[in-house]
Image (cartoon, rainbow, N blue to C red):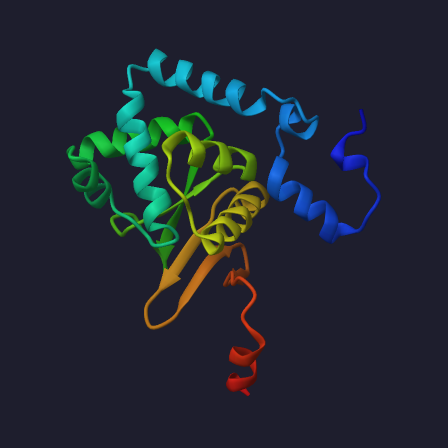
Length: 191
């Protein structure tokens, strides 16, 4: 069986493949049980740490529903009916399991108490968890998560900024606003 990565084509085609299979060897190699194995391993780790699977699904669902907007622990907690401390604890476990990562607000300095942008660490993981939770996500959030995660891997941290305008990703000297392709009429109106 030919691996998807060995198919001839340019970077655009390879990126389309990456959007579906992500970076997990099991999904890259087209194992038909990839989703099941991933969810099974995540569930095992969550149960090992004493976390509720249903509450984890509810927290992830809140992120999927509200992304790409920044969220506070309080907002997530109130959405699922728990304290902000419980939401924070669950989100830290998800970070330690390399499922989620965080972009903090930064203007001149990092604002630790401001809302955070949560992002998923892999496209395959995102799609699989979306199915597990039964919650859809915006295409714009999906692309933003991919950019944030890759910048986080390269720079070790990612930030965002928002006032009258927004910068989705700040890493090193880079400032990036992620947009899904705009219709041509919108672009023509801008000029």
